[in-house]
Length: 314
Image 1 (cartoon, one colour):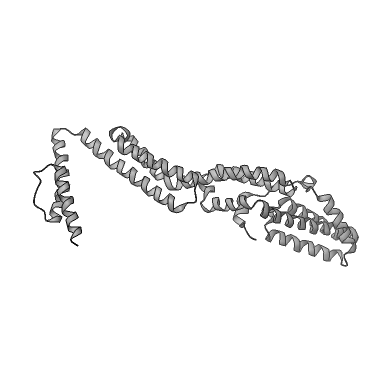
Image 2 (cartoon, rainbow, N blue to C red):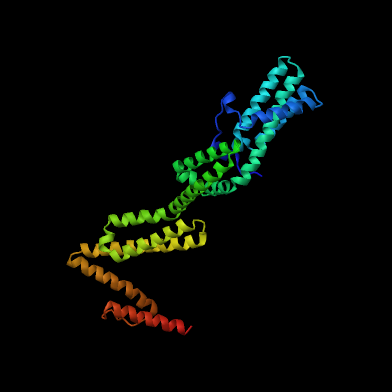
């Protein structure tokens, strides 16, 4: 199973280790098993060292830098020690024991990975979702905090502290959900928020309060939907379109309201005549009688009736 890419490993980082202090919790048992296996192994020390090197290569392929970094580090240390002992001419017995310890430590790391893939599957799956939507780019600080918590949980898994991991995973998943919500909201709704901020700067909330409130409500509905179901792409897309249109409408009404409020008597007539021309364009398209002498509302009603009649006769 290959859930973690090399890039992801680099993103998460490897837990730093330091000599004996990095020993894993079950190292004594591993050492005893390795000592027995080395004693019955019908091969040379050189051959056991080769097996240890192959096992470490497998560990890297299996991405133990991510899943069991302390196991991998310790196995590497044991292999290096075995190589130095062999080069220094020490007897095969002790050399084989150290090399076998490297092998068994790596085996334990692979078992740790299997346990992590099982127990931390919800977290790893959610992490993949966050990477896919680029949460690490939109909210790098929050994402780094999640990564730190995941590192700590993996460290606990290497010490077989599964009960503590289960408790922490529940908390981490709640935080991951919030980062996912924040990311989706930013991607979908930030342009709308920016537009509403520009409208507010033009006085939209006061000169076009009805349109402003409608736009605010549409935005809040989209936010509530994302907070509840951030992966409901279809519903979120519809809510985003509705909020976008409401914001654009508020912008249009704000601009017109400001123009009317700022107009003197001459400019006010110019605005009225411009509105009349908008309706007259419909009249020309319909080949309707010139009814510009009627109130604008009456003109609009007559043109609407004419269009409805045309649609019925199709």
